[in-house]
Length: 178
Image (cartoon, rainbow, N blue to C red; front, side, top):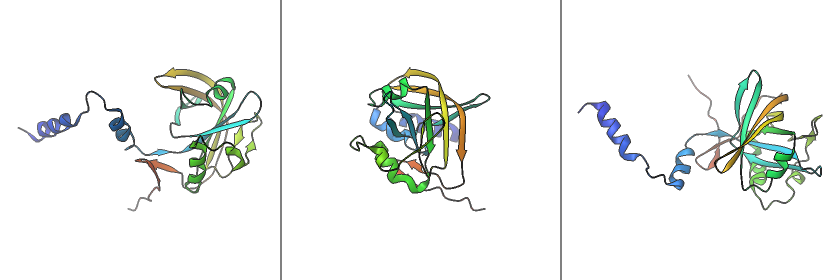
């Protein structure tokens, strides 16, 4: 048997079929992600926000980004009813803020960090490395989540180290040394 066949057989023996959801979640956690807080406003004008790691660039022409929200999220109506949202990419020193915005027991998340407002009245998180104000282009069911696609209307960006999440915890990027 050649080495390729041995490796393939070894890999095949590790495949999880049928899918074990807990093991799948752990495997997906091997992919490090950036951390962001997505914000909007409820119909009453109250700011809403939550921590996400599902943010991604989709297209540069036109400028589109995407993110997803659990179908069970209490913030779902606010994001579905608003014409806009803002993705605030967090800096490495904002992991406490990320935890607070991820915690459903924190009633007034914006008491922790009073936001700035964009011309569209979207809450911008101070200290973020980047903020992207977007017009909602698409909100579509995708499994147990809703996928949001937004057209970037304006953005802000500055240098710094991003918040990174990997294997269930916050971590740091290591500088590449050549």
